[in-house]
Image (cartoon, rainbow, N blue to C red; front, top):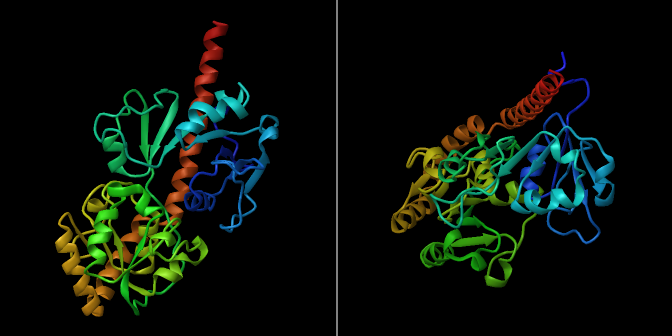
Length: 335
């Protein structure tokens, strides 16, 4: 059967190293992931790096050798990948392979009208949240949502540190979008620690590497996410998996995942969130209860096997569809 993928060998997926945590979780699936590497380690060309415990199925390719490899599918993750990188490092034949554009973020220039730069009907658009799909103008494209996945690392929430923890890279440089002003206001009333790249200069604790993240944050009483406009953060998934109570703005995908007062605390009133964070500091039993219910939600919604299986099926679907289109074109040309 020509239109059926041969599953004896693992699928060979080519992509760029863009979001390390996402790439690591994606790599837990049954396929091989090939990533280009440059000596100067520019964006997308870091290679495996030393932060994540990638398995043998994540394979580095020196950028000059990419054209000599055979792949089954190309996975774009940024505008640069799609508009520039593919033309610089892939052959013309490789650029005709089955292709997927993975969009990690909601639109930034205009929340409702922005047309996505990728409008090729032969490329599948994958969004990481239904909110992102809702907001992007994906006119003319086939669109699919694959929600986040995160492994249960079997780390137990303790909540012994009577503070909240905030995990945002470069918070102060990114301003209102990531809630720098909200963090400032809340930290005037609530003891909060801030971690992430570019935070040490502003009184934060600096970067905590991903392998230590879950055990580090699990000691804090609650996880606070002040971001106004974003996708659903993987750090929040991990906090919920640990059993931490999450306090967040009821915006973007958060309102569809967390039930206020049941599996976490969400609201658009920052004063309300400050009041509830104070309550969590005073009432550890409440924090434990909210965190455990949030953990149940996360285990079901962000199950890592569901995530990797969904990606595998998506790769297979795109590959089979492209093969069928190619075969149909050949048959029509013969006629």
